[in-house]
Image (cartoon, rainbow, N blue to C red):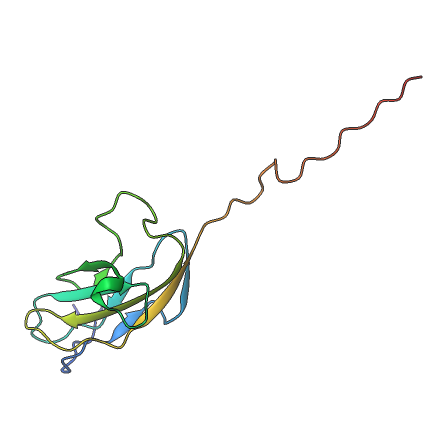
Length: 130
């Protein structure tokens, strides 16, 4: 069906991250990570790290999705298992294996409560004895 938009399949062997934009600010939940598909690739490997260099010792999550997107921390029951901060990610074709994409990062912030009635309790009126 020509009315349905299709992702462009790359002839290159390195995936190109397309979302979120580098430096994306996410609140409460990590963003969906997405990249352009590489022709002939059956699966990918995604790595998420606390450091820009993305070494094995810095990894906080990794996956081998068959599709061109991944939501971090799907296997954890906690909402934010590694807390707020900056996270770096990259992706490569896994089957067949190819080179890593350039690293990108996103910032994850806590969802702060607003409008809490206990933030500012108004003073009680004083009663004077008459």
